[in-house]
Image 1 (cartoon, rainbow over the protein chains, first blue to last red):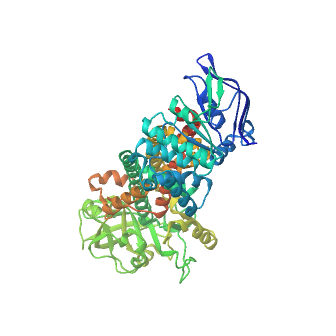
Image 2: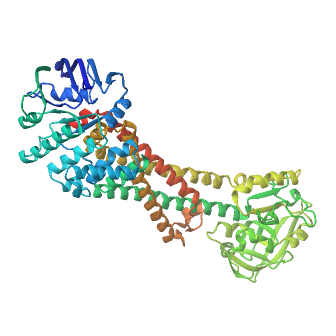
Length: 232
Length: 402
């Protein structure tokens, strides 16, 4: 039996817009097993990004519990949450969010520097991961000198180089054309199938959904549909 | 971690070259301005001190009790033969015994009230007499029976070198003495106040004229002003029954200005750096708010708030360090440019009122440089804390949405 990586129970998140409460999540129960590739989809305001943020410890639920890799996030302080994100969760953002003054290789190394990994080891790991993602020759270029697809690959490299238990990707294809999106998704599927990486992505993009091994659809802050496609 | 933050900060400095160059320039100009101004204030302070102690005062003076209220030879005191002040040789520049009494001087045409001063010319290396320009001859020794008068007094008396003058003063018995003196030379000091008031003659000859073996004062000049208090304490124990006064008691106006100069350095620094700090905070806030999304990302991937704050502070510290270093060099160059002194003779009357000479020579103290550098860096670090706090006040989620 596979291990549960994410477990959400009765998760509620409400935002205040002026004086009107907006229910982003309404008592969501949701879990993800190790090795799953899950897409969270739904219209704008359905709560998919909020759920992703709550799982990633970037947002805290008003009610309910979120357990990631056996740790109840509600019991963690802000610093402990930061450490949790640093060591156990990888993030891929819509806008890549690389550090502009560092080269691709240094961006990948950066997270290991935060973890205190020695310079020789981290340089080797960073180079290896860039090569395995097909961008080994771009290591010395800064983000401004890379295409959108190349930047997103560097962002993926950064997010997985430390071997997190969970990879979260928020609209990873939003700024990419269809060819680059397919390359990115092939990469994510590869990570999922060959490395057993657990991936959760929030997306509007049907192509991204089609790569997921499990599709979860949200509407009005609740899970509307949760299914595993017969064929991918 | 520190190495990582420094590396990242150095890279970030190249990100907005023009803005950072402007910031460096503003810091450098402020620090350079403060440093250059400090050298002028220190020069003013040193000049005032030198004028005060050279003006026959010395750093410390010994009197008989009551002399300062009623200055005459009857309130003198005798020095032991072979007297030598009990002051360490490395602290002592020199000492001079004198008689200083009020007198009336008369030429063929004019009469003036003066201070008649009996001196040993060899001992007067400690006073302005050693630096003034003399027309004619200086007094040769303590037995010289001629007088040295100021050029301005000579003009007022309508006399000149080689002519005779008559001086009337009170002797040790309380009776008036009257004696003729030939003018050995005239001295030309900066300004006319000293030239009008002092008339010098040999100490031994004046003692003969006044029928006394006493002196009315012993003036002591030290190599360094900060030793004044400790040496004064030694002399108080030695000259039991006499008054021992330091230059701050004898020249209270100069002493007040001396202390004011110390304060002026801080006031000037505070004014310049306050203006700079507001500019610095403003610029840092703008720089930090531009990077809010980046900070949000850094926090999202696991960087702690404290590390973000440290990064902003380190960036600001690097900017301040470079700016301060350039500023100190600029200040030093300005100091070198004016090292020979600034001619204030156009404002001679005004500067004389402050007890200054007409040439202001800047003085650079290492302690001032250290003070300016340290306080500037401390201000830079403090100024960056608020922008850094603003940067982490926003949650990573909010920051990423911007």
